[in-house]
Length: 227
Image 1 (cartoon, rainbow, N blue to C red):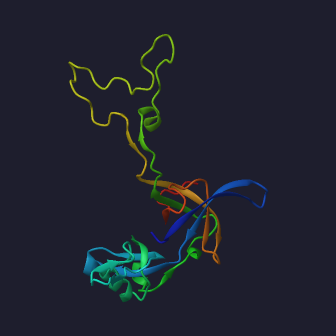
Image 2 (tube, rainbow, N blue to C red; image 1 turned 120 degrees about the horizontal axis):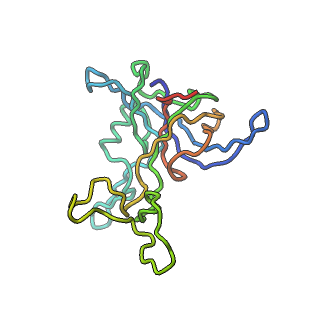
Image 3 (cartoon, rainbow, N blue to C red; image 1 turned 180 degrees about the vertical axis):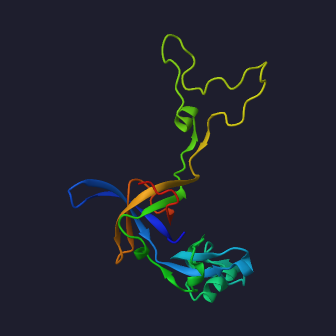
């Protein structure tokens, strides 16, 4: 892998190509990411580049009148991570991820990874945590069919037979049943980059990208290029 960056999903819109074709696109606020650590085979057993994205407040602890410690920014960065970022000469970051670049040895601490590494026409894979939909039935969760809604039927939206009583006398693993839906890592492969805006750090990708607005999206060059 030679290309990779972290992004925040802004939303969807549509643009026109030069030939007048309407293209639905997802707008991503991609980078700039800062290199916070270089993983090497000698020290870590593998080669990778650790990057940080989006500034984060430091954890501030004060004392009240009674001398008791009071945390102002509870979700800030602790001392350990603060020292980690200071070693790289970077401000504290909210997101930290690793990319196994083929040329990881060419990067140095403090280097910036910007959206200009991508160009129109590039194929990418986008990974993010999908929207959580809570507890859902088998019809919405697995796309199963419903039963008849009339003629005295008492079977409408149930998932159907779970397993025979005599044989196999159990429920098979993987049986589609109601349960928690969404909030899992989803990767959409072979998306096309339509346009890049280097000044505003924007990446316009054709089609939909998983995850909600303001969610973190990991962008990598595709592993299954088609066409």
